[in-house]
Image (tube, rainbow, N blue to C red; front, side, top):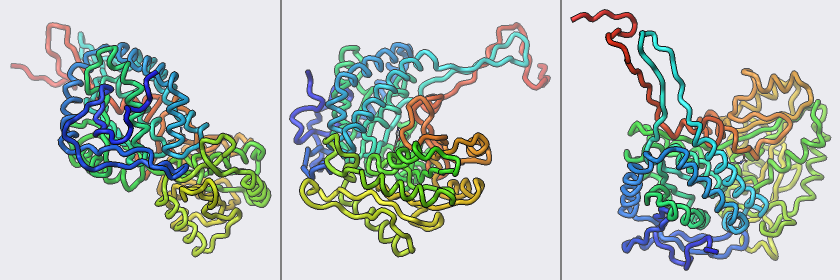
Length: 509
Ligand code: UN1
């Protein structure tokens, strides 16, 4: 069995991988250090790509596109099918590495690899369904139809919180569409990205896939800027903070490129007086503390009907007492660490701000210390009574902080739910059909995802994933999100013997 990491791990050269990992002679002296937030250990150093490494990667990717785009889409699907098989084989190893490098629970690390497997299956089917429409022409003996062609080089900027799944949502779909991919993973999780390249390497080699179809570059913000500003990169798909997304979006727009943005969320659950509270409680707790509050779909706000406010609050406080915080690789634990100490600082800053604004903690915050917590990255999930308009509530803090507030009428609840700059995920717990339908109606949730009787996180890959407003408007993964990775061409064919013009225009010579 091959290792899921190129060995030796220490001192990996710029990760310009095409499956066949390039080993450039020239490489920067600069490295990224990957520390595990689970135990604070330095796992590896990875060299960052230099500008000249980057240019070589893009040139190789461009050349690969010339060939890859001519492969029939179902043949490209076959490559993705084989990749899915590889991820099935290495699910445990990759899931464990995700858990160790990123800090999410092993269950969630494995779940993330399952998302890769699922999107591979989805993409294989899709490879036979990249449908265009046909139209009836207004002119006799004319045929009109549309077809979808690949875009070219797709840049993928992914975040630390889903270090491998988000890449796969983009890459697997882009590949069946005929694009080639250049992946810049988060500098906080470079190893899991290398592991993915290693896992698909044999599939690329054995099938003689042109070198450059799958590329990896490593670096920080500057490397992302190269992608955003580069007219050779047709589409930049970026997942991360709204701040990063604004920078990427405007740089790409400046050169009339395409971007697909999947940015911050500030997701709320409305708990109606008609809710089944027994299912609402675990959904809220998983949504708020899962991945230690570091999903973009994390439940950050809870809008509770005043008649059940005290009851829900108390039941949540009791549920939070059961939470076990600790090493994510130990399956008894529910909550792992935050990604790094900088994340702990922003958690603490948010806690201070909640207090100074008059917020009252129902479940107390704090940093966990002592044996097993030496990395300094473990924090206590907390619940605070807060008001929706406070600046701290209006912004996304990537930590397990849940704000609770009450409402009287459903209109008021929907107003609070929508009353933030972000628009990713939302949900309502109610058994009342009118309430549920109102929440999903045109006058209901303004988010890209709106659920009934399930939480805000844990979306399946079959749906289009993404959100509105400052979340960026992009859609990834399932449904017809594939269209973002292709260009549409409208074709009109005249098989007659005359040249009638559209709109009845006469032009006789
Ligand atoms: C993200 O947090 O960036 O819906 C993605 C979910 C996951 C994906 C989250 N399937 O929570």
